[in-house]
Length: 314
Image (cartoon, rainbow, N blue to C red; front, top):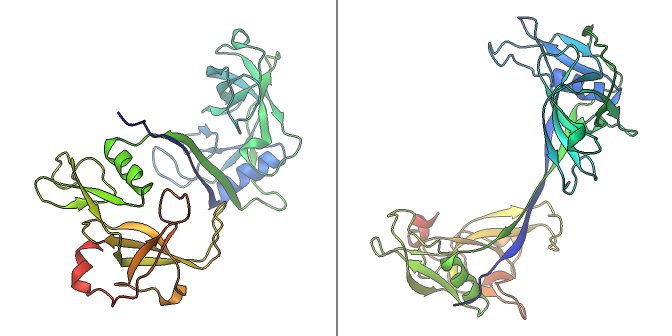
């Protein structure tokens, strides 16, 4: 039995969004050590604030300032913090109902151990020393012995230099283990061959193979070697340099229908100016020494393929 393939993979990108007046006031308020909620038509205070009532869909604009103390409504202990979590030492995830609010805010509680945490525990905000207008301006919550509570008070939501947008990094780390079909595909690539699998019903050849025909729903087992040459079916010009990818922009990324395949795969086009790449261009793979997959595809010099030859693969 061949060795099971596996590899660590990371999906990471910055998520950028603009803020409306309510979210802008909330995050700017955190920067100024002020917690704001929003009042609904029936008088409830929602924290974090939203711009539309979740029940009636009415637009909400009436802001209220809340206390920095509150009560834990539920919690879960985290004994092993992961990278980029709010605290590096074990902590509790908590829902905290701030004094004056009607909903709970999710954050973390700095506590010596799970025995120190319970529903009903009184807590207060510990502010971050450096604040930028983000939920991380609340460094964490910490236990607070006082039983005194406070009511909400109206707030205009106006601050100097308001926060109008945020950039949130999104990252997913996982280990990918391909199945039988993709393992065979990857092993063939290491031999500078490309293999797909043929559906026993519709007879289409899928590259890369998935182990089953997406149209017929039948398992595929018959291996078919395709290519190595193929046809550009469609493409895009990349003008933004990707992090950790040492390729100068602009460059072209294309869908390539390898000869004998009924599904186009994607690859980078090289060996030709980016503005000369076109649909129907005939290409072949270029392998680097020791590479387990083609580095890029280059023109073969053949005449362009006729549109009717690849129109079903667009």
